[in-house]
Structure formats: structure tokens, C-alpha cells
Length: 482
Image 1: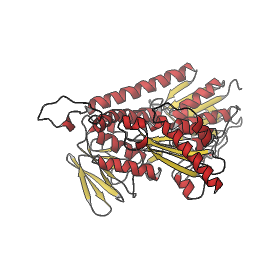
Image 2: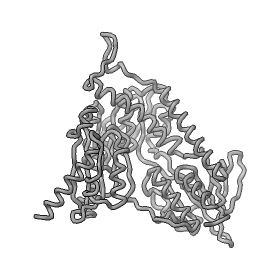
Image 3: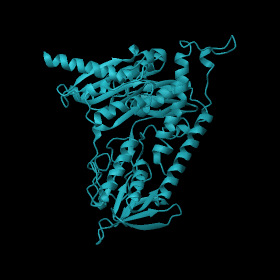
Image 4: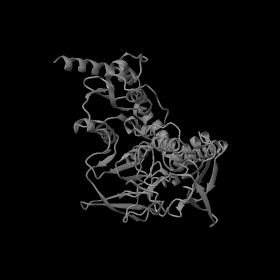
């Protein structure tokens, strides 16, 4: 353990503030240079705000889709439309979103400062090009008042995140043409929302606004929504979207977006033009790595401007580490935090376990949610992993029946000889909670027999995980005897 080692962290998101806490605990002298507030985009404009918005949408969807089946009655005027009894005050929702984000950022700041970390407001960049004679590096901090402060660091962590990608012919105005960081300034629910982009961000916002009451059109350049996710899971979600009234346009590439008064027009590559009141652009992100002196200091970037790192978060420049979305490794807050911790363990000589992406659990916060961990169906299909697969629909689960859950499944992957669980997918309400036992099985190399033999509560949705494991055990045994 070290006593006084100077660590400078540029960026206060999950990768930055988690690294700061670890470094402080290991005895280092730590400074975090942050421009917008600790927590970064994950807390201020991305994960926390979007999942808070989605939480409201989730309540409305759950009520709207199952209240009649569950025997719940709603008092209303005889002339009223039942579908309009439940509404949303988007201004109030967004004020709550911002309030929670700021509170979370404040809590993180308090935690970091209590640990002895110095927080400087400003934009950080590497200075001087190479290392000094003593092996340290210079970090320059451009303060809000225009002054520049120079810091010396024995190790530097770059954790500057990313920002929404903008198309030249679809420039956001913050009112009608929006990025996902700007939607929280809306006071009224978009009447007709066009979402361009069907990846995780696009799918989450499309589902949320549809649940809140918007008429949503989802424009996808690919042949299905969520092209990077499990195909069976994506098929379930797209079917749910369409069934709930969403206009899903596959193989439709948006070329431009124009605002005309209080309307927007989205021109597609095939010549079609679709209209709405608002357009949300969800077409990827750009790493915040420009004009930071990285390449001058020997830090290699890929063609997309992302910092190249190894499994212990080292860059190509000695003493410089990187974590989070600016690396493009796996754009999740949990991965950013782990990369930051690993960087500090390595820099400060503590025991370190390299990053293993095959144990990362991720979740798409749509309704139903889609949670995954480990090897995927694509890995099995391409021969990267030899695995036996079982998919168990939730419609046979007793708890799911009681709750009116009709859509979803549990899918498990295991090795054909040993039965070791190597991956899983859960499509269900609260799949983000249900994936944890599968993640534990993948991380600990548990077999399907071990998963199947563990007690589950009856009735419970998690019982389907044990049942899928039992079916895998039987299939593995039958295939072994044949």
C-alpha cells in the first residue's frame, strides 16, 4: 500500500468517482477534475434521469395493461374514455427527474470529499506531451474563470465519457429536435414523437414515451429493433411495441430532420417523409477525447476517437489509464466503475483482477426489460461457444399468470459436457433483478445441476430460472446418452 502517490482523475462519472474512492482508500493523494458535476452523464443526463422517467412510464404501462384482468375498476364519467383516465404531467415528471439527478450528484460529491479527495471544477487535459524526468505527468485545468492550473500526477485516469452524436442534417434545437440529454426540459408530453435509432437508447425512450401517452414512430435503419441484443428478446419487444400501437419502421434510414413551425419532418433514404411534433435523435455517441492532448502524450485512439485500453485500463502511454464510455469497451456505468477501480488497483500496486466482459450483466430498460449476461445466441451460432440452450416462456410460470404477465422468457446457455452455465437472457418485468442469480452462476462457473438444486420461492418468476436449469440438465443427460 502506498502513502503519498499523486493521482489526477479527469472526469467525475462512475469511472472517475469510483476510481477516486479506491485511490483514496489506498492512501493516494487524489484530485478529480470535473466540468459538469460528479456523477457525470450517468447521473445528470443519462442513466439516472432516463430510468427515473421510465419508472413513471412503467407504472402507467403496468396499470394500463393489466388493471382490467386483475379486477381493478376505475371511477370515471360515463362519457370518459378509459384509456384517458390515467394521464401524466410531464413537467412535473421532468422536475422530479432533475431533482433526483442533482441529489444523487450531491451525495456522490459528499462521499468523495469525505474520503479526502480534492474536487476541482474545470476542464482537464494532458499537458507537456511526454513524462517529466521524475516520471510524473502534467495535467492542465481550464477553470470556469479562464485561469489555467497545472497539476503533477504520478498516474492519470481519463474518464471523460461521451456525448450524443449529431447528424449534419438533423441538428437539435432543444425544443422540437432533441437529443436524449434535452428531453428533460420538455414541459408538455410530445403528441407525436419520432424516435430515430432503434438501439438501446432509442428503444428505451420510444417505449417510455408511448407508455406516457405519446403517439410514437420508431425509425430503425436495421431490420429489427435492438440489433445488438438477443434475437428472441428483440422479437418479443418489437411485437409488444407494435401491439401497443407503436409504428415501428424497419430498414428505414433517416437522412434529415427539419423543423417547420411546431412540426418536424423526417426524410428517409427511400424518399418517404414522416411528420410529427417532436423528433428524438438516438444515433449513438461520440467520446469526449478531442483537444485533450492525448495523442501528443502517446495515448492511442481508434478511428472513432475512443481510447484504446487493455484489461487493466492501461493506455499506450505510461502512467495514463482510461475508463468508461471514452474507451468504448462496454458502455455501461457498471463497467466504467469497474474499469476505474481496476486502474487504481493496478496503478497503486494492489491486487488486481483484469476486466472480464463475459461476466458483465446488462439490461435494456424497456417494458418488458431485457437482461443478459455471458455468452450469447450469436456466440453459439458462429461457433465461438459450444453450448446447449433452453428457452422457457414465462406464460407457464404461476406468478407470471397471477400478475398478468404474458410476454417474456428465461433462456440459459450451458456447456454440453460439464453443464457449466455460460450465459443467460431474461425478458420480463424487472429482468434487471432476475438476471442476478444467472450472473452469479456465470461468474462462479456453477453447473445447471447446482442452479436447479437451489431452493426458489413458490410462486416466483425466478422459479423459471431453476426450471430452465432442470430442463438443461435433462437435455444434457439425454444428449450424453445418445
